[in-house]
Image (cartoon, rainbow, N blue to C red; front, side):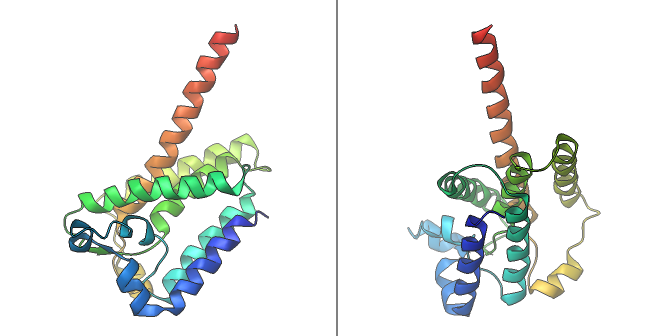
Length: 189
């Protein structure tokens, strides 16, 4: 089991202790960002609506840990920060969203990369996970998706654009790596 996701879980849960005060200062707040509080672009992905929300995102991080992704923790932190920017862009583009908290957008990207770079998943399961997550991201963008029951559990709406942009960030990274590999193979031959 990878250890770095456990550190992320500890951060999620420690910030959940701060409850509304921490959430107020770290959440995505469109007006506050426009007023210069740019740290919110990153910090909104570390705080949650409450314990249940933090617990669900922590469960996702446990899945990342279980997949045992390759790579030093510094690369994964770098991905988290990079994906935070693009996930926040996705939230920003939904003009109906003035406030946002949660790790699930960036977590979607982390799950995609963790599945692909897992130390033990065979190719079939890697591709299957990538397809399942892509199908979920597409479904969430349709009129058939309803977050009503989940909203009751976590205490707020699911901002599906965060999932989409976090996932697209990871898929874009995989495409770039694949294209580089092809270019290197052509150069060698």
